[in-house]
View (tube, rainbow, N blue to C red):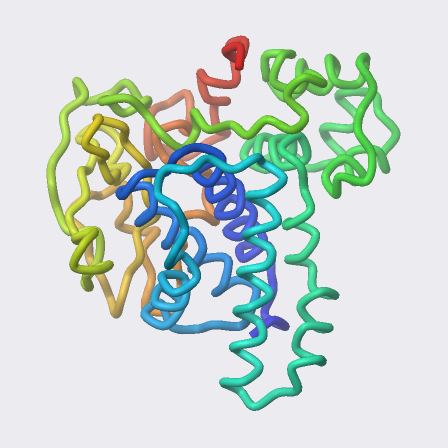
Length: 310
Protein backbone atom coordinates (compact mmCIF):
# COMPACT_ATOMS: atom_id res chain seq x y z
CA UNK A 1 0.00 0.00 0.00
CA UNK A 2 1.10 3.58 -0.51
CA UNK A 3 1.12 4.24 3.22
CA UNK A 4 3.88 1.64 3.63
CA UNK A 5 6.37 3.97 1.96
CA UNK A 6 9.73 3.91 3.71
CA UNK A 7 13.40 4.58 2.98
CA UNK A 8 13.91 1.16 1.41
CA UNK A 9 11.07 1.68 -1.06
CA UNK A 10 12.26 5.18 -1.82
CA UNK A 11 15.72 3.91 -2.73
CA UNK A 12 14.31 1.05 -4.81
CA UNK A 13 12.07 3.46 -6.70
CA UNK A 14 14.88 6.00 -7.17
CA UNK A 15 17.29 3.45 -8.62
CA UNK A 16 14.57 1.79 -10.70
CA UNK A 17 13.54 5.10 -12.23
CA UNK A 18 17.16 6.10 -12.87
CA UNK A 19 17.94 2.79 -14.57
CA UNK A 20 14.67 2.80 -16.54
CA UNK A 21 15.28 6.36 -17.75
CA UNK A 22 18.78 5.41 -18.91
CA UNK A 23 17.43 2.42 -20.83
CA UNK A 24 14.70 4.47 -22.50
CA UNK A 25 17.24 7.14 -23.43
CA UNK A 26 19.10 4.62 -25.58
CA UNK A 27 17.91 1.89 -27.93
CA UNK A 28 17.19 -0.73 -25.28
CA UNK A 29 17.07 -3.82 -27.47
CA UNK A 30 15.31 -7.06 -26.58
CA UNK A 31 17.34 -7.88 -23.47
CA UNK A 32 17.13 -4.28 -22.29
CA UNK A 33 13.35 -4.41 -22.64
CA UNK A 34 13.24 -7.37 -20.26
CA UNK A 35 15.33 -5.41 -17.74
CA UNK A 36 13.06 -2.40 -18.26
CA UNK A 37 10.07 -4.59 -17.43
CA UNK A 38 11.59 -5.50 -14.07
CA UNK A 39 12.53 -1.92 -13.27
CA UNK A 40 9.07 -0.63 -14.18
CA UNK A 41 7.47 -3.39 -12.10
CA UNK A 42 9.57 -2.20 -9.15
CA UNK A 43 8.25 1.34 -9.62
CA UNK A 44 4.69 0.00 -9.67
CA UNK A 45 5.26 -2.07 -6.54
CA UNK A 46 6.84 0.83 -4.66
CA UNK A 47 4.43 3.53 -5.70
CA UNK A 48 0.97 2.11 -6.39
CA UNK A 49 0.53 -0.39 -3.58
CA UNK A 50 1.11 -3.56 -5.60
CA UNK A 51 2.16 -6.53 -3.49
CA UNK A 52 2.58 -9.36 -6.01
CA UNK A 53 5.70 -9.74 -8.12
CA UNK A 54 3.78 -11.75 -10.70
CA UNK A 55 1.04 -9.13 -11.04
CA UNK A 56 3.35 -6.14 -11.25
CA UNK A 57 5.62 -7.86 -13.80
CA UNK A 58 2.56 -8.61 -15.92
CA UNK A 59 1.31 -5.01 -15.66
CA UNK A 60 4.75 -3.68 -16.55
CA UNK A 61 4.77 -5.99 -19.58
CA UNK A 62 1.39 -4.58 -20.64
CA UNK A 63 2.68 -1.02 -20.29
CA UNK A 64 5.70 -1.84 -22.47
CA UNK A 65 3.64 -3.43 -25.24
CA UNK A 66 4.08 -1.41 -28.40
CA UNK A 67 7.15 0.44 -27.14
CA UNK A 68 9.90 0.41 -29.75
CA UNK A 69 12.90 -1.73 -28.84
CA UNK A 70 15.38 0.45 -30.66
CA UNK A 71 14.12 4.05 -30.71
CA UNK A 72 15.93 6.23 -28.18
CA UNK A 73 13.97 8.89 -26.30
CA UNK A 74 15.15 12.17 -24.84
CA UNK A 75 15.71 12.12 -21.10
CA UNK A 76 12.70 14.36 -20.52
CA UNK A 77 10.50 12.20 -22.76
CA UNK A 78 11.65 9.07 -20.94
CA UNK A 79 10.71 10.57 -17.57
CA UNK A 80 7.34 11.67 -18.95
CA UNK A 81 6.63 8.18 -20.31
CA UNK A 82 7.49 6.55 -16.98
CA UNK A 83 5.31 9.00 -15.08
CA UNK A 84 2.34 8.36 -17.36
CA UNK A 85 2.79 4.59 -17.14
CA UNK A 86 2.83 4.93 -13.36
CA UNK A 87 -0.31 7.08 -13.38
CA UNK A 88 -2.15 4.55 -15.54
CA UNK A 89 -1.14 1.76 -13.16
CA UNK A 90 -2.52 3.79 -10.25
CA UNK A 91 -5.85 4.02 -12.08
CA UNK A 92 -5.82 0.26 -12.64
CA UNK A 93 -5.13 -0.30 -8.94
CA UNK A 94 -8.06 1.93 -8.10
CA UNK A 95 -10.31 -0.29 -10.22
CA UNK A 96 -8.83 -3.46 -8.70
CA UNK A 97 -9.45 -2.21 -5.16
CA UNK A 98 -12.75 -0.51 -6.10
CA UNK A 99 -11.37 2.81 -4.91
CA UNK A 100 -12.47 6.11 -6.40
CA UNK A 101 -10.19 6.78 -9.44
CA UNK A 102 -10.03 10.50 -8.72
CA UNK A 103 -8.97 9.90 -5.13
CA UNK A 104 -6.45 7.28 -6.25
CA UNK A 105 -4.73 9.72 -8.61
CA UNK A 106 -4.88 12.46 -5.99
CA UNK A 107 -3.17 10.16 -3.51
CA UNK A 108 -0.52 9.20 -6.03
CA UNK A 109 0.25 12.80 -6.98
CA UNK A 110 0.55 13.70 -3.30
CA UNK A 111 2.77 10.73 -2.54
CA UNK A 112 6.57 11.09 -2.04
CA UNK A 113 7.21 8.78 -5.01
CA UNK A 114 6.05 11.52 -7.35
CA UNK A 115 8.99 13.72 -6.40
CA UNK A 116 11.27 11.05 -7.87
CA UNK A 117 9.55 11.24 -11.26
CA UNK A 118 10.44 14.92 -11.53
CA UNK A 119 14.11 14.60 -10.63
CA UNK A 120 16.49 15.47 -13.43
CA UNK A 121 19.72 13.49 -13.88
CA UNK A 122 21.75 15.86 -11.70
CA UNK A 123 19.39 15.50 -8.72
CA UNK A 124 19.24 11.72 -9.13
CA UNK A 125 23.03 11.51 -9.47
CA UNK A 126 23.64 13.56 -6.31
CA UNK A 127 21.12 11.48 -4.35
CA UNK A 128 22.40 8.11 -5.55
CA UNK A 129 26.05 8.98 -4.89
CA UNK A 130 25.27 10.57 -1.54
CA UNK A 131 23.10 7.78 -0.14
CA UNK A 132 25.52 5.11 -1.31
CA UNK A 133 28.36 6.68 0.70
CA UNK A 134 26.39 6.11 3.92
CA UNK A 135 26.97 9.70 5.08
CA UNK A 136 24.13 11.83 6.37
CA UNK A 137 23.10 15.04 4.67
CA UNK A 138 24.30 16.96 7.74
CA UNK A 139 27.75 15.32 7.53
CA UNK A 140 28.10 16.15 3.84
CA UNK A 141 26.91 19.72 4.41
CA UNK A 142 29.44 20.25 7.20
CA UNK A 143 32.29 18.78 5.16
CA UNK A 144 31.38 20.99 2.21
CA UNK A 145 30.70 24.02 4.45
CA UNK A 146 27.26 24.37 2.95
CA UNK A 147 24.12 25.70 4.57
CA UNK A 148 22.18 22.67 5.78
CA UNK A 149 19.08 23.32 3.68
CA UNK A 150 20.91 23.46 0.34
CA UNK A 151 21.54 19.73 -0.06
CA UNK A 152 17.88 18.95 0.60
CA UNK A 153 16.80 21.39 -2.09
CA UNK A 154 19.26 19.84 -4.56
CA UNK A 155 17.96 16.37 -3.67
CA UNK A 156 14.43 17.49 -4.59
CA UNK A 157 15.54 19.25 -7.76
CA UNK A 158 14.16 22.55 -6.44
CA UNK A 159 17.42 24.37 -7.11
CA UNK A 160 20.82 23.54 -8.58
CA UNK A 161 24.23 24.28 -7.11
CA UNK A 162 26.37 27.05 -8.58
CA UNK A 163 29.77 26.37 -10.12
CA UNK A 164 31.73 26.62 -6.86
CA UNK A 165 29.22 24.48 -4.97
CA UNK A 166 29.37 21.82 -7.68
CA UNK A 167 33.15 21.58 -7.38
CA UNK A 168 32.99 21.42 -3.58
CA UNK A 169 30.25 18.79 -3.56
CA UNK A 170 32.16 16.65 -6.06
CA UNK A 171 35.30 16.84 -3.90
CA UNK A 172 33.46 15.93 -0.70
CA UNK A 173 31.62 13.00 -2.30
CA UNK A 174 34.73 11.76 -4.12
CA UNK A 175 33.36 12.32 -7.62
CA UNK A 176 35.25 13.75 -10.59
CA UNK A 177 33.98 17.35 -11.02
CA UNK A 178 32.76 16.75 -14.55
CA UNK A 179 29.92 14.51 -13.33
CA UNK A 180 28.37 17.50 -11.54
CA UNK A 181 29.11 19.87 -14.41
CA UNK A 182 26.30 21.95 -15.92
CA UNK A 183 26.71 20.16 -19.24
CA UNK A 184 25.54 16.90 -17.62
CA UNK A 185 22.48 18.27 -15.80
CA UNK A 186 20.15 16.60 -18.29
CA UNK A 187 22.37 13.69 -19.39
CA UNK A 188 21.59 10.24 -17.97
CA UNK A 189 24.38 7.96 -16.76
CA UNK A 190 23.81 5.15 -19.25
CA UNK A 191 27.23 3.65 -18.51
CA UNK A 192 25.95 2.56 -15.08
CA UNK A 193 23.28 0.41 -16.69
CA UNK A 194 25.01 -1.31 -19.57
CA UNK A 195 28.45 -2.74 -20.17
CA UNK A 196 30.35 -4.06 -23.18
CA UNK A 197 31.21 -7.78 -22.95
CA UNK A 198 32.63 -7.70 -19.41
CA UNK A 199 31.46 -6.85 -15.90
CA UNK A 200 32.80 -3.48 -14.62
CA UNK A 201 33.57 -5.03 -11.20
CA UNK A 202 36.90 -6.11 -12.72
CA UNK A 203 36.91 -9.38 -10.78
CA UNK A 204 36.66 -12.91 -12.11
CA UNK A 205 38.48 -12.47 -15.44
CA UNK A 206 35.20 -11.48 -17.13
CA UNK A 207 33.83 -15.00 -16.65
CA UNK A 208 30.11 -15.64 -16.44
CA UNK A 209 27.84 -18.52 -15.46
CA UNK A 210 24.35 -18.96 -16.89
CA UNK A 211 21.49 -19.57 -14.48
CA UNK A 212 17.81 -18.71 -13.98
CA UNK A 213 17.00 -15.16 -12.93
CA UNK A 214 14.06 -16.22 -10.77
CA UNK A 215 11.55 -19.02 -10.33
CA UNK A 216 9.28 -17.97 -13.15
CA UNK A 217 9.90 -17.03 -16.75
CA UNK A 218 9.66 -13.39 -17.81
CA UNK A 219 8.05 -14.35 -21.08
CA UNK A 220 8.60 -16.98 -23.74
CA UNK A 221 10.32 -14.45 -25.98
CA UNK A 222 12.73 -13.06 -23.41
CA UNK A 223 13.55 -16.29 -21.62
CA UNK A 224 14.61 -16.83 -18.04
CA UNK A 225 18.38 -17.32 -18.18
CA UNK A 226 20.81 -14.66 -17.06
CA UNK A 227 24.58 -14.42 -17.07
CA UNK A 228 26.00 -14.09 -13.57
CA UNK A 229 29.42 -12.51 -13.09
CA UNK A 230 31.72 -14.99 -11.34
CA UNK A 231 33.40 -12.10 -9.52
CA UNK A 232 30.53 -10.13 -7.97
CA UNK A 233 27.39 -12.12 -8.71
CA UNK A 234 25.69 -9.34 -10.68
CA UNK A 235 23.14 -10.87 -13.07
CA UNK A 236 22.94 -9.60 -16.65
CA UNK A 237 20.89 -10.06 -19.78
CA UNK A 238 22.86 -9.87 -23.02
CA UNK A 239 22.10 -8.37 -26.42
CA UNK A 240 23.22 -10.03 -29.68
CA UNK A 241 25.78 -7.23 -30.08
CA UNK A 242 27.36 -8.11 -26.71
CA UNK A 243 25.91 -5.31 -24.60
CA UNK A 244 25.20 -6.43 -21.04
CA UNK A 245 22.30 -5.03 -19.02
CA UNK A 246 22.38 -5.48 -15.21
CA UNK A 247 19.06 -6.88 -14.04
CA UNK A 248 17.48 -6.87 -10.57
CA UNK A 249 16.80 -10.34 -9.19
CA UNK A 250 13.22 -11.07 -8.17
CA UNK A 251 12.50 -13.74 -5.58
CA UNK A 252 9.31 -15.76 -5.23
CA UNK A 253 8.71 -17.73 -2.08
CA UNK A 254 12.00 -18.41 -0.32
CA UNK A 255 14.23 -18.27 -3.36
CA UNK A 256 17.74 -19.46 -2.51
CA UNK A 257 20.17 -18.47 -5.20
CA UNK A 258 23.44 -20.21 -5.86
CA UNK A 259 25.27 -16.88 -6.13
CA UNK A 260 26.17 -15.65 -2.65
CA UNK A 261 26.24 -12.01 -3.71
CA UNK A 262 22.47 -12.15 -4.05
CA UNK A 263 21.67 -14.57 -1.25
CA UNK A 264 20.65 -12.04 1.37
CA UNK A 265 19.05 -9.62 -1.07
CA UNK A 266 16.36 -11.85 -2.58
CA UNK A 267 13.15 -11.84 -0.58
CA UNK A 268 9.74 -13.51 -0.72
CA UNK A 269 7.13 -12.67 -3.33
CA UNK A 270 6.07 -9.04 -3.22
CA UNK A 271 9.52 -7.50 -2.93
CA UNK A 272 10.44 -6.63 -6.48
CA UNK A 273 14.07 -5.86 -7.21
CA UNK A 274 14.71 -5.76 -3.49
CA UNK A 275 18.47 -5.40 -3.90
CA UNK A 276 17.77 -1.94 -5.31
CA UNK A 277 17.47 -0.90 -1.66
CA UNK A 278 21.23 -1.48 -1.60
CA UNK A 279 23.76 0.23 -3.89
CA UNK A 280 23.07 -1.09 -7.38
CA UNK A 281 24.28 -2.30 -9.85
CA UNK A 282 26.39 -4.46 -7.56
CA UNK A 283 29.32 -4.39 -9.98
CA UNK A 284 29.84 -0.64 -9.56
CA UNK A 285 29.49 -0.28 -5.79
CA UNK A 286 31.68 -2.12 -3.30
CA UNK A 287 33.85 -1.46 -0.25
CA UNK A 288 37.63 -0.96 -0.42
CA UNK A 289 37.86 -4.32 1.39
CA UNK A 290 36.30 -6.02 -1.61
CA UNK A 291 32.98 -7.03 -3.11
CA UNK A 292 30.23 -8.06 -0.69
CA UNK A 293 32.20 -6.90 2.35
CA UNK A 294 30.91 -4.62 5.07
CA UNK A 295 32.06 -1.03 5.35
CA UNK A 296 31.79 2.32 3.62
CA UNK A 297 31.35 1.99 -0.13
CA UNK A 298 33.89 3.02 -2.69
CA UNK A 299 32.69 5.45 -5.35
CA UNK A 300 32.61 3.59 -8.70
CA UNK A 301 35.55 4.05 -11.04
CA UNK A 302 33.04 5.49 -13.50
CA UNK A 303 32.45 8.49 -11.24
CA UNK A 304 36.06 8.92 -10.08
CA UNK A 305 37.25 9.67 -13.61
CA UNK A 306 36.08 12.39 -15.96
CA UNK A 307 32.92 11.52 -17.93
CA UNK A 308 33.23 10.74 -21.61
CA UNK A 309 32.15 13.43 -24.03
CA UNK A 310 28.64 12.94 -25.39
